[in-house]
Length: 84
Image (cartoon, rainbow, N blue to C red; front, side, top):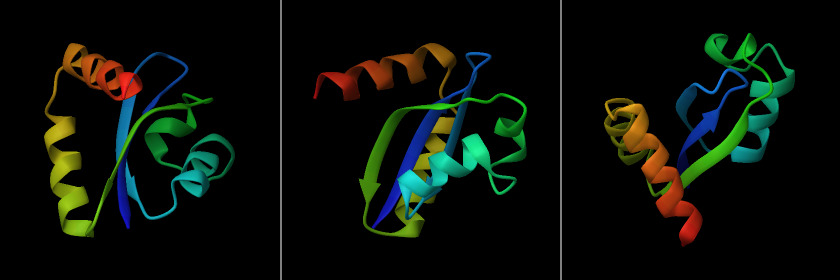
């Protein structure tokens, strides 16, 4: 199972990625050099959105769609997910 996720960085920017192990990946973003270069200087990060998908291909396509969203649309996506 793959997951697409959004984290909110300390500087209030968003980072979107995909993974098969969300807990490990968030830990890497916050504590390890294996986290994304973008997030390494913006720690700590906080998970604000995630969605499970069956394949890496579907997750990558969803990630690409999310990355094209405006900041406001990403905030709205986060709010919708939190209400579910």
